[in-house]
Every structure is written in structure tokens, then in C-alpha cells.
Length: 241
Length: 241
DNA sequence: CGTGAACTTGAGCACGGTCAACGTACGTGG
DNA sequence: CCACGTACGTTGACCGTGCTCAAGTTCACG
Image (cartoon, protein in one colour):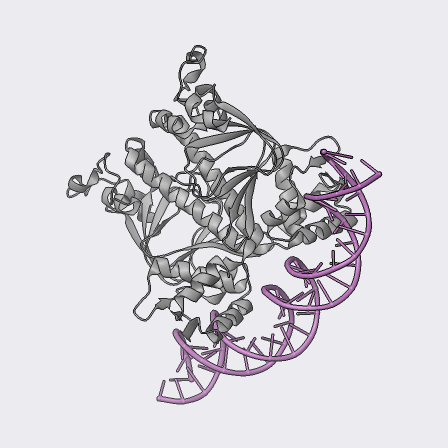
């Protein structure tokens, strides 16, 4: 199914219903997200379902596709020659990834669990962006947000201890996924992924979650869900106490 | 001197010699850097000399100026409510900083030693970029490079021990500043700045430099210069051994 | 059920942090 | 020119967080 991506993206046969929604007005800065723009201009993008722990692209691969996570979770990783791994970030449902201003990817993207993706042509987006200042701003903005996120994460890895890192991580996840009733938070990724994202080991993750639990800050029904019992305490940890 | 910046940047009185060099051709991707473009289009930018440990802007300040480091070194910091500090990166002579796609700065910029800056109007750059695809690409490229750098630094903070971090730091500095004859490397910043950049303490920096010295990898004439005696060994440490 | 992967917990250790003392360089004023 | 003060750097002794290694436990899935 992957091999059909390029074809379908550059194929205009099924362009019947598209014109009505393809043009994004240049004037208003409003609600049109980059994601929506991609869906509107490339409505027949390929969808693919991938099993867990599948590599979507690796460091060095060409950047001719942009992806939207329809369902599931992605991790963006850097692998070192010595076999170490760092998880730069996770990409959640409804978010895009693979948007980068270089000809080669500088990280790999892998599925965490089962994932459904929509893939879009980078070349077509670029051509559309050339004549549309709003879209350019959306792209700029997406990359800038990634930069801000990375810098925030640098602060976390540079200054925070394990409890603070976990608190920061849970809170950011809660902001993105949203909390279910009772402050329930689903953790799509495993302990090892969290460890590699926070610069800790899997054992330290377990122990620190336990410490937070004993402190009455979180509750742990099972390994993949969490109840944020005391949000103010978590926030205090994240901005540091 | 700072108060005259805005005035001079928007002032076209002295436009006599400019037209010949102001226009950057839209077609070739070649040698024109963003820095050169700024110098060409805003030749009468204000220069200011600042003493060491001066804050140029703080988190939350408006992003209406872009700066070029004419001489000296800048550090880009994040300060936390609890009084901790992280040095995101250093900006060396000939490099620009302050270019960000948000209305407010998300970090502060401070002089390390005595510094001479040139400041340019962000608004004017944006107006020029609106009609010039090459300049837009330069801006994009500058921000993307910052993102790549941040992600590389995340890998360092997430995976490397103190020796590896120092090796990576020295090598990157050598690539940017360049090595003088005999592999001599000047360190413009103090130990505390290096520590806050690498997520270590000042004592660990001292001890680890000593360890590298005893291992025959570097030589330390004094606190602000370094001889990279064994570059291959440093590289092995940086990519990990 | 049985099997394997993921998670958890414990015991011991090491790296880097903390605290404290000392050394060095530079700048100022006597 | 030296005496002094201050900021920065270095070194040592001790401690604690988080890592390593190893043994269980739980869970999902065949």
C-alpha cells in the first residue's frame, strides 16, 4: 500500500469534488489549520494502516511526504551509531509530522501502537505555498512551534530531576490529548519510550511514577492510564518547587 | 545609543549608495546569506557596543529587532521561576539571532563578554521577504537550522555522559569558530555558561576537562583556551564509544 | 492455559551534585 | 608598584539521585 502513495498524490483523475474547497482565502488568518489545508487540497491522499513498531521513515530518507496521524501515536527518534536512542517527541492523532526544510530527514518516525496515517505530497504543498502567503505562514508556524517545543524540552533535560520531568511530560500530554472525566489520562506509549524521551531509564520511570503515586499526585489504574489526582501539585513540580 | 535604533532603521535619508546592492536576484540559490542580505538592505543599521553580562532582550519582549553579532559572543538563556538557568545556545561573531516567528521572545539574550551588535528591523525584513522568495527561503532555512541544532542538543542531553557532552561541545565550537594553528580553540564563555549549556555543574566541567586532559585528548593552557590534541578521540567520544 | 513481552521492584553501585576550601587572574586604589 | 578585593576557576570529601543488574509480576495474545 505504501508504493501507491506517490501515484495517487500526483494524480488528478478524481478531481471532481475538489474545486469548491481547494482555495484558501489569502486574507484571513483565522481558523484554517495546515492540517485542514492539506485535507482540502489533497483530498485523495493515501491512507495507510501500520502495525506497531513500524518505521515510517529513517534518518537520511528523502522528505517528499508529509504525514497526518489519523489515529494512533508516532514517536520521532534519533538513533546513534552506538545503539542509543532518543525520542525527540511524540505525534498524536490529528497532528502532522515529516514537515522539514531539508532534503533528508534528520530523525526517524516509528509507530508506537497500531496507526492510521494520511500522507500528502510535499512538492504539491510547496507549489501551493509559493502562491499563498497564508499557507506559507502556516508552514512557518508549524516549524516554529517545533522549535519552541524542542527548546522547552532542552530546559527540561538540562535542569529538571526525574519527578519534575515526569510531571512536565504528563501535563503536556494532558494538554494535547485532553483529560477524560475524572482527570484520566491515557498513555499511548510504553515505559521505555517515555524513558528515552526524558533521558531516564525505564526503571527510574517506574520508581518515579510510584513516588508520585505515594505522594498522592497521581493514581495508576494500570500501565497505560493515569489519573492526575493533584493537578496543582503537578504544575508546581513542572515549573519547579 | 539603543534608542536610536528604530529611527535609523526606518530612515531612508542616506539611500544614495544602496540601490546598486539592495536587490537580491530571485533566481539563484547561491552565496547570498541572510546576514549579507540584511547588511545590504539595511546598511545603516545601528551598531551598539555592550559590556559583558548585559541583557539584550528578555523572555516576553517583543521581537521587532534582529541582531547580528559583529564581535563577541552571546548566550541564549531560559530562566525559570525557581532561579535555574539553561543556556540554549551561544551565538558567535558573524551569526544572527533574535529571528523568531512569534511576537514575543521565548528566551533571553545576554552578552558573554564585551560585544558589538548590529540591529536590523524585523518589520522591514518581513516586508522585503513578502516579495522575495529567496529571502523567505533564507529565513526558513535559518529557523530550520536552529531546530536541527536544538534536536541535536536534545540527543546530547538525553543520551550522553559528561565526557561525551564536553567533546561534542568542543567539536561544535571548533567547527564554528575554527581552530587556530596547533588546534588551538578559544573559549569565549566561562565555565558556568558551559555547565548550564550542557546540563552539568561547574565543578563537573572542571573535573571532566581534567579527565580529558589526563587522557591526552585536550591540553589546557588556561581557562579560556584549549588545545584539541587528539581530534579523532574527541570525535569518537562525541558520536559515542 | 502457556508463553513472551512489558512492567515492577529490589540491592548495590557509580556518576555527577553539593558543600567547602583553596588558587588564580584581573582591576582598583593606596 | 604593590596591596587588596572580587570574581572565577580548581580541587577535594562526601552524599544522593538515578543507573545497572537481577529477580519477580502482570498482562496480552495465541
